[in-house]
Structures are given as C-alpha cells and as structure tokens.
Length: 251
Image 1 (spheres, helix red, strand yellow):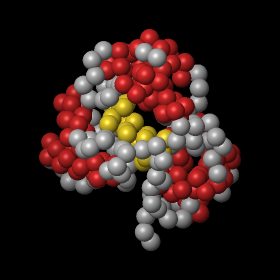
Image 2 (spheres, helix red, strand yellow; image 1 turned 120 degrees about the horizontal axis):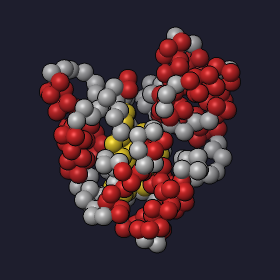
Image 3 (spheres, helix red, strand yellow; image 1 turned 45 degrees about the horizontal axis):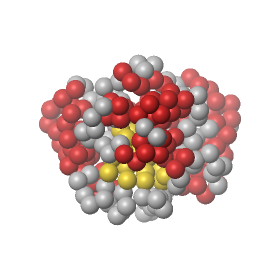
Image 4 (cartoon, helix red, strand yellow; image 1 turned 30 degrees about the horizontal axis):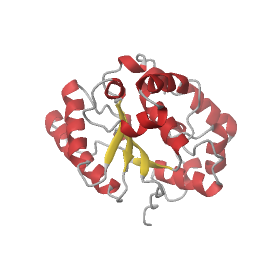
C-alpha cells in the first residue's frame, strides 16, 4: 500500500522531527553536530525556505521550518542522505541511520508556532541536561546573540524582542506542548498522525505486535505528543498497559 501523504500546512510552517534508527545515537561528537548543521544549511538554501528554530539532542532532532513552496520533503531527504553517508563512512558501517521518514506537524496559527519554538528550546531542560540558555546545540544562543543558522526575526517580532523571548521560553516549561495548537484533534487527525509516526498502514496491527515492538510503538506515540487516552483510542490497547509504558520508559 502507498504511504500516507503528509498533512500540508496552510501557513507553510512545520515542526519537523528526525530520530535515529531504533533510537540509536545520531551525534557522537561536536564534529557530527556541526556536520549535520552544515548539511541542513545547504538543504534549506532554497527560495523561501527558512529555519526558525532547531535543537540537536543525542538521538533526535527538532526543527521549525518555513516552507512556503512545498520543498520540505526534498530538503529533508538531502539532509538525511548527506549525513547518513558521512555517519556510515565514519563508523565503517552500512544500513539505515534515521528512523523511517521524518515527521512533520503542520503549524496552523501564531500560537502554535510560538509554542513549538518554546518546546524546541526546552528539550534539554525536559531531558534533565541543563537550562535552555546553557545548551550549546540549539538556536537559543542565536536568539539571544548572533543568528548563524536560523532566521530569528519572525519569532522575535511576534514576542517583542530578546528579553520577551527568554521569558516566553521559561514560561513554556509549565505548559504541555500541543501540536494541534490547543485544539482537540479530530479522530482523522489522530489516525493520520499515528500512521505517519509509526510508518504502518493499519493501526490495528500495533495491538498484535510482540510486546517489545508494541511498547516501542507506544513510546513513539508518546514522544510524538499523544496522550494516554489518544493512544488508547487509535491502537485499541488497554489504558493500563499504555499508562505503564508511557510512565516507565525514559523520555
């Protein structure tokens, strides 16, 4: 069966997430991170495309991208291919580096765009690594200093400046990130999002997977923003099972 088509943003903005295959480490060194950013810079050098925020964690990446001309898939493919070739050559290995397709959440409002920017910059805080302003591998330093990889103008203009940006990111720690901008997602939206996250054609198949694979799928849904109730709704797996997996697996 053909893959589910990506939902298209009416604004051109997307929250993009890339994960290492089977949650493997993507970045072993600062040189790896620098190489990824260089590949990203080249791939986004297309008319109209802009990087508004980014954060490189050990085994996954968050990006906020403006793609007014529908070039996102081609650009991200270039990033992944370029980095995977380098990664495999360096490690003397073959095989997939990234987990399936990248995920892209359409941004449909100013509120959602700002909350996404806050969420991206708070990733190191939520992972108990360090405060957002101390993490060297995100665009936070670009917002409070000199922008090198991303365009900070849109978010700063919306918030009112650098000090307002600092306050906003700190305040976002107390809010749950909602990729649907605070609106209750429809059943069709939940299903489409789950299908894309898991890379399957039929969500009913998740329930019958071996326990370790089933739990891995549930963790992917959790990390993709699904609540326990939403995961129960789309998979048919019991609430108690989902709750144990959601709460026990490290974030």
